[in-house]
Length: 243
Image (cartoon, rainbow, N blue to C red):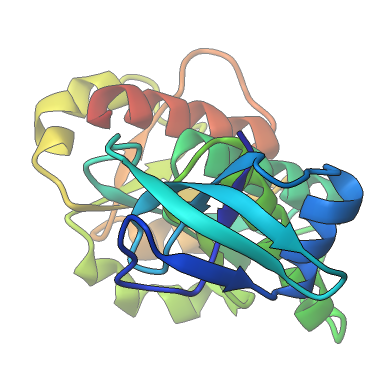
């Protein structure tokens, strides 16, 4: 069944709801071509999942009846925030899509010294597109939460916020021994974890020094991974531990 995130809260079985978000209505009617009595999944704004049946529809709205609650825990036991060094646009889209599928909670693109791409006037449109990709990936992977892609930030602007996390992991190609699995017991106790990934150009020495007292440097193995691969690979390992 197809999944849709809606703004309603405090939904009960038997409730009749009107879906009037134009993107949802268009997707149900024109893309999926669903009809009366077809079933869909909806996720309320309080992160509860339901099964609903289509009662009727028009060009502007879809009327549904809530028939059941889905009682499955789909989210990880810790919220993982990805601080991603800004790569080229298409790579960032891939990172958002795949890390959302892997269970990331929040994504903040950051401008680092060796970024090939820099923050520009188009950033608002880029972030808007990335949030749409996040929504699509959350629907496809049956998430009960849509991860937010935050506005682009400069590296120095995230440093103070790192103290709010139980653990901060820096993916560092210079680290040779410490791996995610070595921290498994500590990770299982965490509720908030941050991952910092450099861009295509890697991490500058002054950035590494600023993170020395704030983050644990880890390796993902003996191979050097592309920036878009590193984030996905790290999330999949954390997801295995926290699932």
